[in-house]
Amino acid sequence: MTKTSIIIGIESSCDDTAAAVIKDGKLLANIVSTQNIHKAYGGVVPELASRAHQQNIIPVIDQALKQAGVTREELSAVAFTRGPGLMGSLLVGTSFAKGFALGLNIPLIEVNHMQGHILAHFIKTNDEEEEKSPSFPFICLTVSGGHTQIVLVKDIFDMEIIGETIDDAAGEAFDKAAKIMGLPYPGGPLIDKYAKEGNPRAFTFSKPKVSDLNYSFSGLKTGFMNFINNETAKNPDFVELHKADICASIQYTIIDILVNKLKIAAEQNSITQIALAGGVSANSGLRATLKELAAQLGWQVFIPKFEYCTDNAAMIAVTGYYKFLKQDFTTQGIAPLPRYVLGSNE
Ligand code: KG4
Ligand code: ZN
Image 1 (cartoon, rainbow, N blue to C red):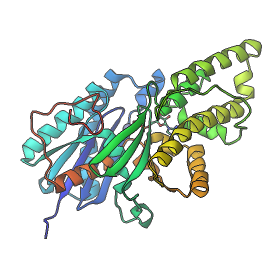
Image 2: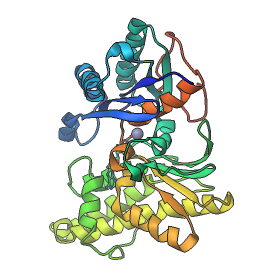
Image 3: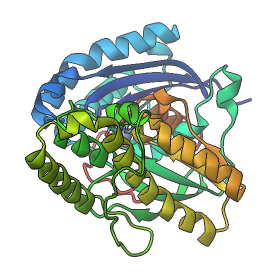
């Protein structure tokens, strides 16, 4: 009999301060405090993010333990996000985790945030719906505000990036397009909302030509900006008059770029188990497109519940749990890695 394990996961890589508790692989608490302060600036301001983490971290940890009905002394290990992310943000979670583990005299587990996004597919609760996880090997498209990667997942600890963006992330493309239209940050969910009423073929934008399985979104952003500038020069009300069509068309273009490479990746590796991860997986157009492809190509598509798609600590705790099982611990000498590459140690 293995003895009971209770892992606390801590996430602070960007603008969400989060903590979660997992007992013997089952999620007991999942708390996220999103920093609204960045809305006024149209994007995440690193210095403000680290200050807000500093304020939020203790209340968030406290709330997670209370929700789980667990005391600090019952914890078996502390798992934290080491990177990738913003240095000032990562430092808050890393320093807290180190002090917490040292004070409780329990092991410390470092987690790669991108691995966490993928392992969100293995979060178990009592909810039947969530028990379905992809089987290995599968392909995961991780699409967030900071990252866009196609990952070949051979096992829990055997992941290979087979494609990624060479500039902007998909979420960034949504947010920048929204900003150009004068919509508030983060604009991705708003584009999704207005797109529902629009025609995705109303306007066309040129797509990038990038080799292999890599992506590029910066050219699309420039093309979109020029288009909006030209049209508003002719008619200042252009965006307001055509909001739904513009949103539907830019969303359609981003999704088309994403799924084209995903289809090639699946075909090249003869894989039909396809998973989505990251905040952009919330996009209803992307979800619908993947469902259509599933029917067409015989794919089995896995999309985690929304709260496990966006930044959260449940994904850090579940990764910590698997590392705990193989006693993969780190030391007090550990430092954050803002450019932590998935699959590497450094
Ligand atoms: O994973 P996440 O919460 O944080 C990062 O690690 O970046 O992802 C946030 C990103 C933002 O760019 C946001 O605009 C985008 O996910 N997003 C969406 C939707 N919901 C969130 N993009 C398009 N449609 C949505 N429904
Ligand atoms: Zn993330």
